Structures are given as C-alpha cells and as structure tokens.
Image 1 (cartoon, one colour):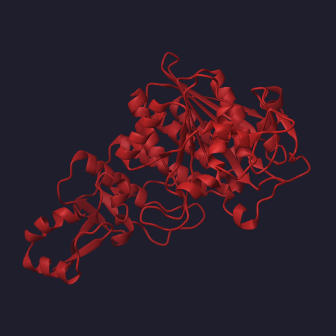
Image 2 (image 1 turned 180 degrees about the vertical axis):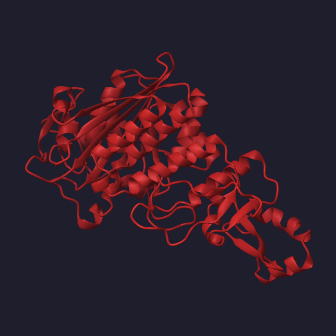
Image 3 (image 1 turned 60 degrees about the vertical axis):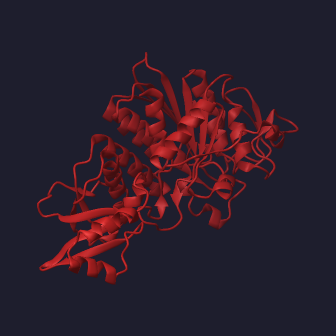
Length: 455
C-alpha cells in the first residue's frame, strides 16, 4: 500500500493553520492585526471552500488560512496538502470539535495521496502535525488500498494478486483463506466463474476469506474481481477497453471493507467472497449464444460476453446465500448505465430490504460519502427473457443498471437480505483530494452503515 505520509509528529516546527469557513471568517479576521487584514483584503480572500491564503511574517511564511465548506465532508479539507507549500508542516491553530478534527485528518490523508508504484511524485504534500485516531488511520488505509489496487495495471494485479491481497489481510487479522482455482471450479460447481475466466493464461479462481466469532451475526461481502475486461468475443472498442484494469474495483472495495471490519474488530462473523478472473479472448473463450447452467441450477443464455461481471457474481452470490448470512453486500463495477444515470460520484444502490437500504443512505448523509437508491423494478425482468434458457445474461439497452441488478437478485435466496452497489471506482480527472484514477466510493459510508447495524 502507498505509505501514509500525510502526518508528522513534529509540531514544534509546524506553522499555524487557521481552518475557517466563510461564515466564521469575518469574526476571525476582525481579531487579526491590521497588516494581516490588509494582506487578506488585497487577495480578496473570504475563506471560500477550496481556498488557501499564505500569511507573511518577518522571516518569511508565518502561517496560512484554509477555507473550507461543509465541515462534515472530509474532502472539504483535501485541497490543503497540495495547495500549501511542498514539504511544509502545519498545526491546527483554531479549535475544531472532535468530529471536524477527524474529518480534517481524513481529508488531509486522502488529499496527500499520489500513486507512486511506477514513478516518483512530482512533489511532496504538506504535512499535518497530528496523531489521528486508530479508526481514522484504518479508514484512510482502506481508501488508499482501493486506490492502489485499482490503479495497478493488470500485469501486476491479476487474479493471483487479488488472492495475494486477500491472503495478506487474512494473515494480518487471523482469518482463514480458501481458494478454488482452475478446473476445480467445475468440480466444486462454480461454472460461470470458470466460463468467464477460462480463456486467460491466468487461472480463474474463487477467493473466500473467513474471520470472526462463529456465534456473531454473519456478514457476507462479495466483490466483482474482473482483473481485465476485453469484453470477450463481444470485444470492446479501444476507448471502452482502455481503463478496464479498473473492472476489479468491486473486489477492491470488498477487500478493503473486509480489512476494515477485521482491523476495527466489528463483532461479526465475516465471509468475504471474490470471484477473480480475466475476461480474455482466446480459443477457450465463451461464446455468445452458449447456455451455462449456473451454481443455483438456473440456465443462462449468453446474450453478450461483455456482460461477464454478473456471470461471475451469480455463482458467488448463490454460494453466499447458501450460508444464510444476516446480510449480503456486494460491490461491482457492473454497468455503464449506472454512470449515465447517476454520473461517476454517485454509486447506484439496489437492495431488497428497506432497513438495510435506509441505513446505508443515512450513513452516506452523515459521512458525505453518498449512495443513491435505484429500484428493483421486477417487471423489467422481461428484458432478460431467453428463448432457450431460463434467462439471458443481457438483452435490451433499456434500464441497464436495473436489469443487471435484477439478474443478480435471481441468485439470492428467498428471504435473504441483500444490497448491491454498482460503483465506478474511478476519478476521470483531477480534483482536490481526488486524483485521476482509482477511487473508493461509498466505502466510508458502508463502514458507517455496518457500525450502526452491528456495532
């Protein structure tokens, strides 16, 4: 994982940083020396969200003012590390309550991130003189893991590397890991995972991590681990394939959330399930028009080999349902339709349980890490009709994210509580605190939701 370099323990040499919103700026400014007031007025500084003003002193830099918006949003502070001078260190000069302080620290950590596996960053971030709580550090580490894993090209982040990441988490927290790979998937009745991954030179696999007290409520986390998606024989165009290293973003979220659950010792019995494949083109590639009988016994006609994520998830979700957990939560970079509907920042939430959905929606409001609930509109199952099998894996372009979720729901046992998050896992461009590339979306709100549900 990219090391956390956002913080320093050396507060003696740190410069004072005044963290203010526009509402509080006028009162603070009125208490400053005339020279400071004139300096800020000359820059027309008002502590607007995302702004910074450096304060001069007799010997150079004397301090700074950081303008923020919504104090409950960690990203309100995330511009600081690269807006302040490189390598400088800062201490909080005005009082913030505990929640705002935690958001400042988390936002500083998120804003300090640059993916550095293959090249050295152009400059170092400014550091915050602070000792964040263990929970802030654990949440930050989980978010940075998602970014690192999604940013890593498939050559270095294939099915084996996802397995290695799960094993590292299991070893760190006393979990048990089971891996079913290659033709053993057929022997153990995971036919769709095998079908999608069989054309690759890297064996498909099902990764299962188990942790926690057997007597505790059982939580199952499932993540789509398509390490690269060519589209299969229904080949993607070049621009659609360019960033498909990120198609394991669901697995990255599930892995990172599982690590957070274990690190924070949430009182649950955890089962993490990650089907990991590469959807490649080759002599063994599965074909449009084939019929695959899934783990649950439902026959599926392959309408499109580029609708592969739901195929590997259907066996994984059926396996999760067999264990009758209290809840199943799955993460998947599943459809472009969800992005067209909601854009890159709002993951689409589908749930068959109103309480679970509301817990996540409320957690998103509190953490400013939102999700948006979409309908499981079951009349649209007609778009998945097949003439020769129980259902097709795709069909009409209508309601693409809804029909994908409806497909997955067919593999959830009756009465089983389930939520599905269709997540982008990516920033298309640079914004403060959100560098271009892999991104953790609704991970923090998922953790907040789980704390409410089980903590």
